[in-house]
Image (cartoon, rainbow, N blue to C red):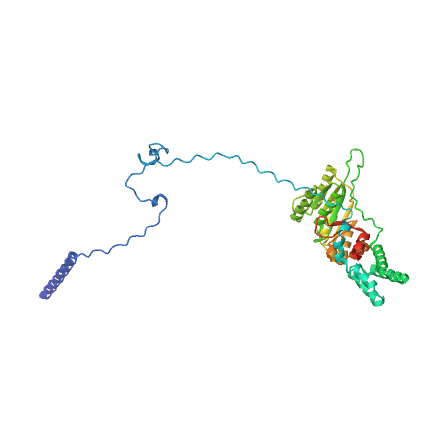
Length: 420
């Protein structure tokens, strides 16, 4: 047993000695460590990005102002060229104020419709020349008279006025017997002038009112322009200002269409062209307030006439129509309105009569302005609207030109319809 223990101890010692020899041999053959990869260097900015220098940095105290021996350059080094002298200041003249637009001299209104006759007759030959052609037929049978009625109704004369005119024509043609072209033209002209109406007062009340008493100022005539969207109210108001200036009136414009800033700008441009001042308010402001101020300014300046342009409104919108009534009531605090002009688009035909009826219920319409009459073959709307409202057509628009608004004269209008 003891012998066995001794053998085990000797074996353990032998194993331990052999292990020590192996470890010692490994230490003698040291393997060089693997090369370490350089750690990535983060990019640096500012002073940290500079390469270290061996020379010490110079402080601000060591650096003198440029041009001295203690400057940034070392002694003996070439000096930097001197900075160029500052350029002498040049006085800039203030911008000249924009010159006001030259005031135009509008065409006189007398005879405007005569000058525009050719433009009107080109678009109205369906009514005038068409009737002459039918009446010149050798046999005026029932079919021909029906064609005459259709021509008049197509031109928006209206059913009742058409029937009246045809009956008178039939009677006079029978009595006349012979129908030379000259006789037929004279007959048709006479009947159409009668149909359009010669007994209505078509003058515009634009004369200033004299002072009512001691200390009271004279009051200008006040005209308000109303109508639906798209009929050309603002343009008509501007052209009307030209008509009045051409007739020797002084004018103040009131931009009571506060829903569209462009409308006020447009009206002001029209006024500047003829030397008329425009009173306007903030966009979206109270139109009645602008209208009131326009009349107030007109009184203060002693002008002859104040023109008030109102916002376009659909005749079916009750709220907008009520607002128009408010504008009228506020303006009348200065005095009664002299004219309320309803602008109608001649191309709308019978629909214009519906508009006219509704506006007449809200404000007291005193006159009609028919625009775009040169582009419509529906000249009979002149007859229909007058019959509907009992109100005369006072002005007609015959184009896009600044002076294409003319006073309406029945005889010259009919002459333009049927030609020479």
